Image (cartoon, rainbow, N blue to C red):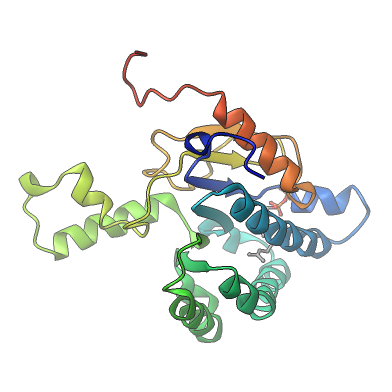
Length: 236
Ligand code: FPP
């Protein structure tokens, strides 16, 4: 599947998985059916990312704002995440996937929190793909908790730098995303990785998340490979 020179493959792809509800509505199905199909797309995308040589994949599975959805939809999503974790963990581990959860996981209750922590521990030594699951995640909250941690660490104002501040974020040790994809035609960042996306290439695709396939990822990577990244500098 090495369609592009290795240097053109983004090391870190981050995805806002949007459009499950519209996918279901278009078929006269309940929203939960869209989320279930979305979970299948998660599985496909992880496999495709591994095949393409992506090293870090961050998926926005639940935002801090998603708590405002009706209780039954929150329960459906929580159930789906629990079910997904239980049914997929062994295979993810066998494939060399390291799971890392960012966000306020404890809001999902002690049972899921414990399972997520056990999954992180089990996969901690894997190196093929780091799968970052953003759960009850908000970019602003991430920055605020980083500021708190920096203060708790006793850093003086003049000692704070962009580099050491990044080490207090939930993504400590993970390179910033090279490519951010949002599905479903919506063109917003929606409080995703606000600090970390500073120089990411951004791709908005009309594909609804449940329809996202290995080919969709390949098309996104092909588009990325044509972009000229300058990081604010002038072209050579
Ligand atoms: C956005 O669609 C999607 C979500 C809020 C949740 C994403 C969840 C999954 C992909 C499935 C479960 C996740 C895992 C990790 C197994 P939307 O409901 O906002 O769609 P809409 O904008 O069309 O209503």
